[in-house]
Image 1: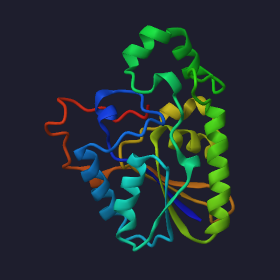
Image 2: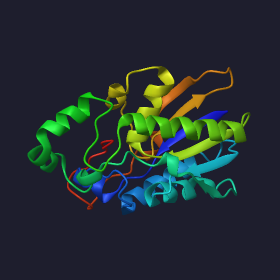
Image 3: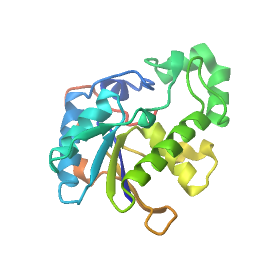
Length: 215
């Protein structure tokens, strides 16, 4: 199987630097344009399946890809972003003010989680389940996952045998494409964070500045 990992288009929470987690936030107008751009980028690829997280920002991104291939979007809740519990909707500064010690621990320890949220180990387990499921269905195929930055970072650490705390060392822009090939029986990372298709797309008047963090 060849797997394209696509991060969803930008949202207002991304633009405002807010932790999103599993809050079901829609794409911003710029995010919709980014989704259309990644759809065009992947239009020339042979794709057998388009799979999305069940959160709307990923689903809308997936729909922009799938329509070029006359494919349905299949949803998989295991592709959801890391659940961030009571941090969802807060900015980094707000979380640091309210939960400074917990924030430091969460950055350093894979078994840490915000109150009501998930650990990195739990997200890794979801990623493993999803990979086994879609490899079984399309062992020789090409599959697109429309998913989330935090999820992709954890997935890459898992595939490359890295400690999960290294997840933040991957830059993963909105609608970036990361490609992994499994045809040799083990994962080969083809490229990470391809974003050439978003060149020329600007934040415009949505906000004065944008953040494409993987929070």
